[in-house]
Image (cartoon, rainbow, N blue to C red):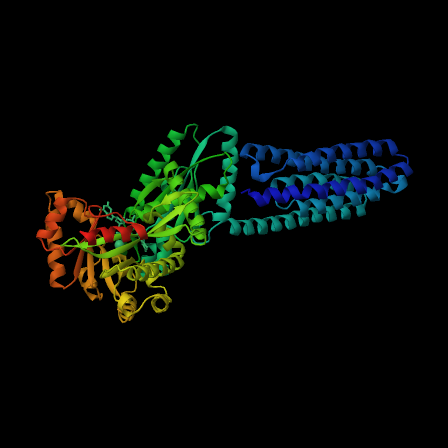
Length: 619
Ligand code: C2E
Ligand code: CA
Ligand code: CA
């Protein structure tokens, strides 16, 4: 098996051979001149120089990372040709000097032949196809020469030369085996026997170089087993290992011979496909193979009496040879695979322009969001909440990001990214502080509301400094009356966290007078019993339910149920996303106390909110 290290090793020998010929060659030239065989020695040296020039060209032509498979094979043939020529020239000088007994040059000849054989057995040990014939080519003439002496010492020398040949072959074989073993270990995964990541990247780079020359396409499938960790955790690592081996066996049975399968690590496998002239054909083949693999992997496994069911998520990327690096295509397949995971696992996703755009935008948002706070691009809007009499009783704080580069980025887009990167902690602190300042300014302006709501994301609430931060900000900007107006809106995703810790944090904050509201109520997956454990004061009916009021299929029943439940649990209710008079009428009929939505006002900047409030108060 030939990989990058094999070729690089061979490539690195070329200069050694050049040095070994050109410099000692001068000595042979001198000897030839002194002992009357100058012309043949000179002709020989000219041949050495010509071979060296050829060697330099072969050396220069090598660039593994950009060579296609064909070019690499061609290079290898040339390099072997060069090695044969080189040793043949040394056999030639042996044949020339062995005849010059009168000047004792034959000793030099014998020494040359043995020296060349030692060099061949050590420097060419990586390649059996080179060192075996070359060693024989060097040693056989010597053996014949000794044999032809015809005296007893000649036979002793023959025996010696035969033994030496055997020793050199033996040494080269052992080194060869050792190299092959080390190479196998470096390029294979021990557990499954598949190729490893490093080998695969090299292989992919070669494939891409070939595709670049042929203008063809190929595909990558990145396969990740779903919930493999659960198998490992519940049934033990032995069973996990067996399962991986069984998975590999199924993969190898399904995958065409022209594909390469490798293990990237853990429960992640990658397959590179065959080549196609058309992109469409390539996509079709990739998806067909993925579907087949998903079905095969899903069939149940029996391992140590356990019946195991497992599914897989497959990300597909189409590769061509142009520009991009091997790593980039693996990354694309990886992104596509995560898309499957995000959509509920057990499926296939093809990395396409749309996903590329989304990823690009995601990265842009992530990058620019870091500067948004410092550049004062983050502002707050306030959406009024009204009671049944049309009085403004509260406001919800909604964040806005006006990026000079990206335009207005909606919070639905940047808040989740801020959560992933942890920036939400800093961003959230800024929102709290500006919100508190507004609340204080409003009171100084004579605005009299009952509650002031701020959205708090899960990562923010569970951050270890959160309670201390809120207490410090309350101390700095608010007083007891104002802090009792605060409502923190949380979502049901909070329950996925350590619920006991969440309850602890909520209790601590309630001591400062802060109330809690369950936002987007009814859209999450939490159980009522879990919800009931949280010290809540309010729920917000999600606008999807308000929107569904006009539908016949139980839309109204949902809202009525939530309102009833809230009244039994003594929770305040805010209906959000109220857009029409009909929705408002319905909600009023069923005793909903507070409303928020475009019917009354969109989220407003600070001063506009004040103006809106005054306008309402006048009426
Ligand atoms: P949310 O907390 O459910 O906020 C209500 C969203 O509904 C707001 O969108 C608001 O502009 C919109 N809305 C209000 N009335 C109506 C209506 O009548 N019709 C329709 N169609 N929409 C209405 P916005 O401001 O784009 O915020 C989206 C989400 O981003 C919020 O959903 C919240 O989850 C998050 N978010 C916004 N500001 C913050 C913040 O300061 N911190 C955190 N952690 N999240 C925030
Ligand atoms: Ca909210
Ligand atoms: Ca909401």
